[in-house]
Image (cartoon, rainbow, N blue to C red; front, side, top):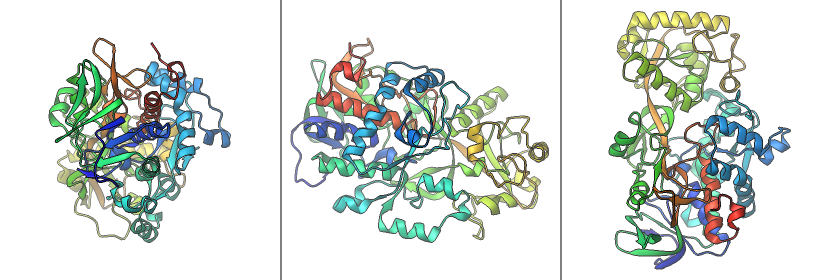
Length: 544
């Protein structure tokens, strides 16, 4: 165990937070800002968890950036939208009612800068109450502001430090200022998830929050049905106010995945420490676990050399499947999905299609030389030497044979798709019809649909990609105040849960970009205010 800035920890705190992702850090900062003594315990050697290697986007309805951008939104519209996408409920209501309180709190207490992506649509834009602009993204953050703890902030070491705002502005990989980004990264300027976590981590340090890394928690200390603290490998630490579980999902636990998920997660991009520790500790106290069959699904590619803490991780593919001139086929060589739809829906749709065919889910991207030179592919940019993990062939037949696909079926699939691309209408999967598809398309595409272009100019390329996940999305059931619930529905005094260790309120529908982090941070704020006693139960909502 490594303690930040102190020789030892106290044996007693008001609040102990298990996990250091964005949700846990917001809970810690909220409680500490109200005068509570707070300790954050992190299992790994770095601060930030899955949040720090994410895109850093948070979904916040009716945010002030929308107002400044002239977009009309209100909480009741968002409530109607979520009623259709995830079904609503008291925890959903708590998120909606306090999301902007959380945002205001962070702006007062941290240097975090968030920008509303005014052109970014909700994922189900046709549903009542949907809007543009609810996704907010952090600008960059100079990790040197953390002083001696600069390098303890987790960041995505597999990518240079560009923000998602810049990602959209620059479009093709060919337009990225790679030398500038290398210089930025070398200086310690971080982006995306690390730029979200960094300012909150800094504010926690300034507020007197204690931190320990390499500090896995083994058990919750239960005294007569009340959680009174945590047990580490060699000591107990008391928490007079309560314990907040914020220690991530179980996507790195094969046994739990086999037991709960509809299919295994063959690849993920989170740190390999998310093994369901919080779920198991809570379950031993008769805590109810909900939504355990849910995950934040996303298509990913396994690129050699890309690792987190020594474990190989996946790379989320976005423009590599959404830009015009690429298709996704299954093991029969046939298209099975709208390639441009949001990542979570894509994997769910592909799984449904494979089940309908009675075959295992396998997916392949196939594209041509024009696509590769115009957009690049992951780490490849035009002019580079083609990496060995991209399959190539002079013809579609050669690519199909290399990938183990039926060449005749793949050729027929491409011929049919090319007719759609020429006409601008995808008759099979309606790619390019929705505003979300169009947002991710190429407005300079010379064909009628910004998401469609023929796959016709050799050489041709392809590779298999996998149904990956950012994390699992089910766990500890809570009430609207973040308090854990037993299987009989009663509250477990002294125990709270936020983020992927909890039964995430938006796990069943994924309404928009940032749907994981927006609620996690908001409910971290709600739990922190409850623990600090800074609001009445009625103000927090959901009081019994």
